[in-house]
Amino acid sequence: MPLPHLPELYEQRAQYRSGVAARLAGLPVETLRVWERRYALSDTGRSERGQRLYSDLQVRRLRLIKQLVDQGHPIGALAQLPLEQLARMTAGPVAGAPAQPLRVALMGAALARRLSAGGRELLALDIVANFQQLELAPAAVAGSGAQLVLIEMSELDDSVAPAICALRQQLDIAVVVLYRFCASATIRQLRTQGCLVARAPADPAEIVLLCQSALAHEPQAQLTAVRQAAPAARRFDDQALTALSAASSSIYCECPRHLSEILLMLNSFERYSQQCAARDANDELLHQQLANAAGSARVLLEEALERLARAEALPLPAGV
Image 1 (tube, helix red, strand yellow):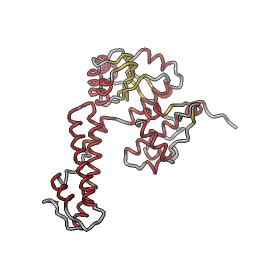
Image 2 (tube, rainbow, N blue to C red):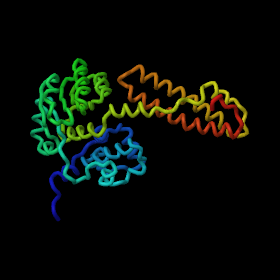
Image 3 (cartoon, rainbow, N blue to C red):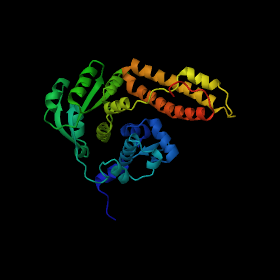
Image 4 (cartoon, rainbow, N blue to C red):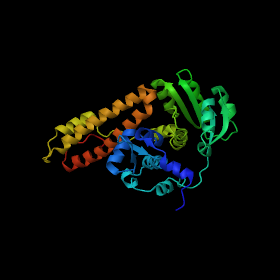
């Protein structure tokens, strides 16, 4: 029996715990655990302590599933599909096909040495520009054809965050920032501006996956999509919902009252999330997504409540 090629062996044997695999795939680890529990998403190995271990190929598969779920595909329909079919659905590269290396502009002498000694990583990353100071980045990147800027700073503090954010806006390409020590507020600031920020991994293969993930998932584009997809305006204000809740109905299960009370809570949570998004720029994307989720649920329940109110001849507010 012929032996697999070394890259194939590496992709099958490289093992990451759930937290690392989720981060590389762009998923919250809680979401990955729910998907595994409900849909048996991956045939993973186990560590001596019983923890799930993911291979390089399995992480790639998770990233494709995340991308398709973001596009609106239900997770239940994707969970058992093979990697090749997922790649075709995303118009991405098929596993095993030769992939073009990512063109990277690099800052960090230690990181450059690690990557140059990595062997396999050189096949996945093409270092087209190298600079040692942030102010030199625009000149280094100009004309290089770089798809991504990779920055390593051992001690990442808030004094350099504005310069990195300005670089991200000026170059308008993906930025990955690796650190060893950093305040959480600085991390949030950089992520708000669309940078992928992560603790510097020990395995150079994880750096490759982080770069791939940064190109596949642009937070800034997600923020624009969220703003464009805001739900419709409210059809029932709190006064109308209170009136419907108190109205008599022939439905013994008291559905109008229950629906009205649920909508009152959704309205309140939607307003609360919008206030959080306006108050804290660092968490704007997260809270805007929460507000939109509550608004989408509200729209569906408002339609149900209107149908129910008309069927039961209950009072509806003017304009509905």
